[in-house]
Image 1: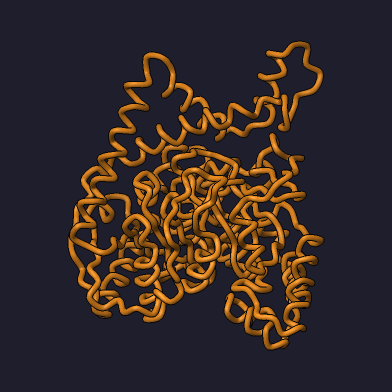
Image 2 (image 1 turned 135 degrees about the vertical axis):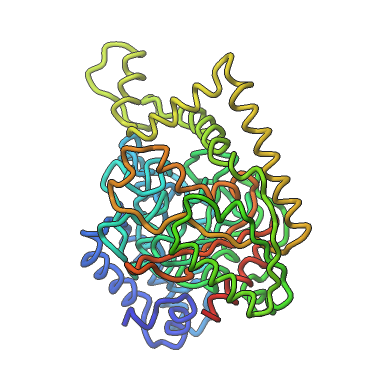
Length: 477
């Protein structure tokens, strides 16, 4: 029964027409998780009781002939950096291994209010810090398309759950590419909205000026549906924008013919895998054949994006993770003899190597004597990167690029080379730094059947255009 019900529309229609019950669909997904997830590792916590309550509520509505909400009965997965009331939320870290939040993340609450059935919490890189999902304190995630490969990070569990049909949709978070890159590696759709479009309330912070929440889905229409549910002003998040939320699904039907799409030479240079280049260039040709005008643009400060990102993100991480001191709700070391030893050992024992590395980098960048040379200068370069996009969007409606310079790499391949791992984010961090929206949509495969993603970037709060372009390409391809 699961195979025909892979999309939100299919699930909602089947429940509305009483062809299947939400409860039966939920149980089938749990059976699939039990069968498949032992080797994939996508889930950290399942919440059957919560899912059962939601399923029962939707089935009663369907039985009484009530109009169903937009995500009625849809089995979803939530990245384990989003707070869920009464359900363990770990951020894939030992420091929060036993933490149970007393409140819900706004995005999760809006998903459930729209009828979604939350199956469980998905694995990720610890505190969302990573590009491979090998940094989880509990276990790595494997790519369902090739079990010897990474699913991408940090939202690898969410992308793997959707790709393996263990969930119809999922929520991820994106700080430097953590929705789009896993979507590319797993062959699904990943959407990062504009900074401020979706509330961050209840999201465990990595880098507060860069963090975004967004959907991972099977197709573009589903991404548009989920975004329409979770977007909008939230009084609990002062950075959420008080702007109207368009009907993103209706916007998909607008023609793409006549749109101007920018192609930046900086995204097609050294380090781009030849098969990825060929697939992305073919996708651009397909968009051109659909009536889109392809326009060369330049984003000259792109080479500085990685060092800029890894100064700003680590500085903010250093500040945000200072709260995990073993005093209030995080891991506390045992057998300590002094307060200072308790602080030191609690953090040393509960944080993984990558988190420690980023805390040290960030603390150094913020330290006396180095703040101006590193952090302040990085913020100035961030402004230049944003201006590059502003200038380009005066000429074009959207920009098309590869999502990642390579397809999914092997587990362990880059674990001992942090710089090589960081460079995997070279095409995605720029959008986070500029605060603009981006989407990754599948655009082909390598000879080894590894998925390749096409990234589409848009103006601030213009998710409608990038969704329209992605949908037009998806339908044609």
